[in-house]
Length: 220
Image (cartoon, rainbow, N blue to C red; front, side):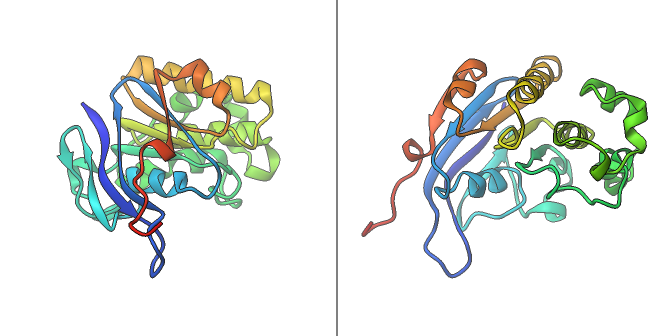
């Protein structure tokens, strides 16, 4: 059981691919680390694995089932199976919404009930914070809400794309402990993308450099 990319080629439209023949596997219940310099395609790979963007070639599979389409066009049984935690909590939330509404978004889209208070408690958000809007909370509190939003999907896999880059050391440690707890308790597979190699070494069962996963295009 794993989330896997198989020979993925991906990049921006009408430009040479950023990723060429990239393969990686994230087993269920484990935390896998991915490192690499900025601009080398880590976020592109994250978005492909999260079923947000389609690869130009290759495929993504979830528990041995190849995904077809992206976003809401993904086959029904795989919708919500992969969640993503983005680098900037402020860029990835609607400033007009309360934390309660932000956390509930995936369930509302899927038209299913969700225990917002329960999910919030799992990430350490107290009930009084749920009525606040993003500008009324810290970056760390907002990123916890984003983590709760991701977990509200009930995902099998979670991709954290530099999710601690904008947080201080103490908040980073707290967020990582929460992710570790979810991986252990819910058997969620996690891909943790970070520049912080010490962080990756401390909490990941294996760490790969993106450069080791990709084959350069011919002529480069």
